[in-house]
Image (cartoon, rainbow, N blue to C red; front, top):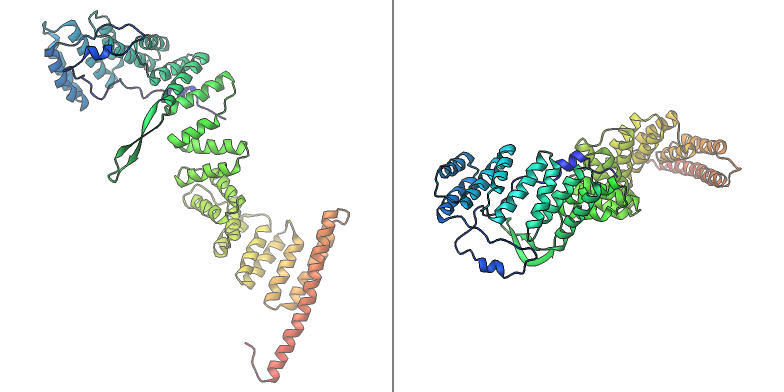
Length: 479
């Protein structure tokens, strides 16, 4: 199965934007260092260095400007502090972090990189802030395609982070992928996915106002969409086997997109899970994701195969109506057959008529004749069947003559009907080989039926003629 190209991996890799928590400026009031010491940490940490109260006030004033993306105003407010000697190195490091964030958000990547590097040179910088700067530098290095630097910053960030996020491992895997180090990419993307899937997240539903609210229940988490795509791409590069079906099942449930539904349908088809294949294509159709002729043809065939010709016709009709399916002999024939099988004969007629006009063979005229016959439109049925026989290249010419005879019988063209039944016998004699057992049986069956129809037609003609004579003798007119 064709997977992502490296260019697409790069494009999807990370929603590369500066890291920011819900509150850009921490609530320094009531900050408890003792609370941080309650947990046993595997890695030694320095004490958190807090900005001065004066700096905190300034940062709290800057925060709303950043939240509103008022970059010029935020920069102006921060620049006022640059010349004030009362601010400590810890304060200035915090200002630099905000400058870096603003430059990053404005896509001024070189300025952002220089600013974060300057921050890291400060000895009195808070270690948490320094680590956030490292992650931002990793993101920026990735954007600038400086992948080795991105890896260095990420590994340093992980080393100094108490609880590294799955996003960091995902970015690390993506960066190794860009360097064609697929073994490392595999190692880190599997860590990222395992971390994401092992966490519990709250179950949410939409309330009457359409807002997402938590139910109080929990469910297992799911990795980011691109993590699964990257995993499949890595295994492909390493030429290692990977059962991608469970991955596609996760993708359609959590990131429902056309390519995942059609990919899943294809995988089910390869495993002969035809009902599941049908379910996947139906789900994609119901979400209005299908937009290719071959997809509607496949959906129609699967529905028809599972005894649902009406839904098959409706699905294919939707494809025609929206321009996804073109008027061609094959597609129109399928639409006619689906409506025909669903006993929607009036809807089958126009499909067969168009298909027959495009065909070089007479078969579709025979189908059209069957539809007219079913609607008691005997004259139209005769015309269609004769057109089919004349055009030729029929799969079963003998049965076409049999059908024509039955149509002629219904509106009492006795001689023509008998001629058609006799032609049926002659055609079967020529086309079916007695040396082949199956054909021999078929020939005997159709010829016996035709002879019975001849006898029945002759008898019916005599009966009708006798009845007509009796009516005339009684002075009654024919209806």
